[in-house]
Image (cartoon, rainbow, N blue to C red):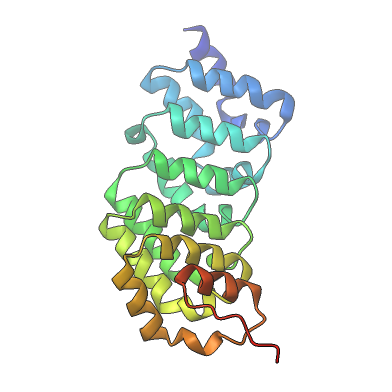
Length: 224
């Protein structure tokens, strides 16, 4: 009862207050203690706003409050929140704090429609995410998480289509490493033949060399 009274007073301002490091911990505690639908609705009230959620998700204090919402409030109560977060997951993943929240969201979200929305966003922004300092971790994470699922097959196909570009770049080459480790020996051979990777044997690109060593086809250039 007391929590309801407190939440009714604070509800409109929670998403703004959570970026204050002094207030964030108290808000996390309120969320952690919540246990009723009424409390969940009051907590989510201001976080269901797209802009409020976006800024809180990128803030070093707000990020922990968002994560607490994701882990504490059951998915079926987070419908509007989930739709909004799915819309910003690409942007969030390109930030130091947002990528942590994005991974947490994927762990606690099972709704098939939301997963399909996320796949569409990744499909449309794949290369940008793959080459981003933090965004590449989202692709890596999904590649491993969905390795044996139809969604994982789609991620693998996107990597294969862009492999020749990705393995030459710093951040996207990390994705290529994970991808290769998931391949069978026959699939590795097919990858080498399909992409003609032998042509890169004289390269000085350290990212390419790393991947070619992983594939077992790197030949050290003869200096003489």
